[in-house]
Length: 574
Image 1 (cartoon, rainbow, N blue to C red):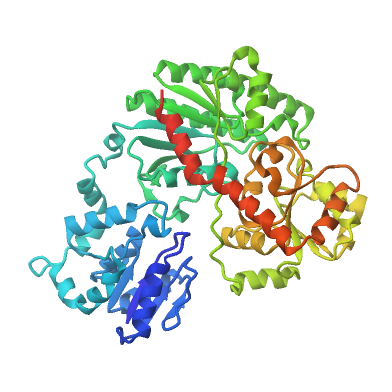
Image 2: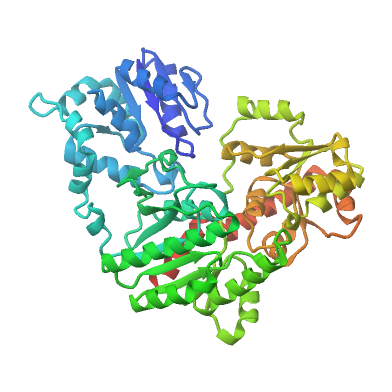
């Protein structure tokens, strides 16, 4: 039996899956082939396959297989090595849209050249010959009759040091621009966290930047690093992910104040690390504006160490209606202090940049604009995926027959307007609300509109699976976006990349992003209802035209590769 595994990286690997299926179908392969196909959208016709297997199933299949074929992810080809097998490794390649760069190719070449215990296939056309000659090729990988596989797996750190002389954490970062990022919880929660994940992913092979990222060690939103593919643990409090040095910071559970303490402790760690390792010209990039009252102190320390302090103010937090007046006053004061002491303010919206310049013109802040990013690649989830079918069944909705909103259930996201206007519209479609629970706001809206009695409105809670969430956007008839506070909103970008028909609240931040690719509505009574009725009667050609314009907005201005390159220039230019 031959077992093929492509890991869990969220891009297709059709090149390998299709080739193996064709070899099996043509009779070149005469034994059973079992595949783990991951996010590939090609479905084998001649082989047994599943998208994912449990750990126990994977372990059994690797043990039973005569030949194991893997992608270039280290954890995938380590598994057969640990069982004394010589894997065939087919690295993912950027040119085929299988990964964001060619690090798998580079790493696999180095392992084969230095340790001689894997068979690397770069040209998929040669896979047939490799399979035919597998026994002979595998025998050549054994030096003097003694397998090095066990040593390889036991001493991976030593091997990495052999491949990279600067492997030791204290020395491997030399010669790079060090960038310390504070303010996100890690890599798996919310807008800032997605930004960090993409930034470090697209800079994985960057030879001129070394990231150091503060990650929340406890409480809501904490990163579970063991779930990060390719994570390498350095200690109980440090690990590498996308080659970024990640350090875990604990915070006391003090309600909304815990975020302030978390950022403060993260900055203290940065100062200590910079001083201890004698890092020259560091950049400390603080996301959000929570710690303004103490930022003068940290900015002073950073400057004394020869570094610079950059700030991303996010949106206009002091305008959020969920906050008490004193909290909004704190946000305004804190933002003022953050901007005043910054060397550069990076804004993800041109409108926000204009506001920052005008509001704090007496400080003459240096600013620049770098947007948030998004993807236009379709979801890898099939139309008949069991997870999708169960979600549709459970919530009693049909593809193409519902509008959807995705976001936090808070006042400034205009759920009241969207619910009120949907109820007065003449649409026969459903309205699906994917949001966190907010019992207080829900109770107020229920008392005012009795929306639970409208069978078209379905509040379904949160959806954490990103593939499913993207698929829901794709099969919705339209998307409602009501955010009125903030800059470039991630949920709007994701909607433009996935949903053809978007109905968007008219505010400068949203107009800057959507331009003429969306339909706009206001808070005026009856306005959004009229837009919904108009949307219901649009022709297929009109909807397709808007969808094409929306995707072009993403491709032209908000692709992650463009965003990452803009940050690289900012961080590496004096």
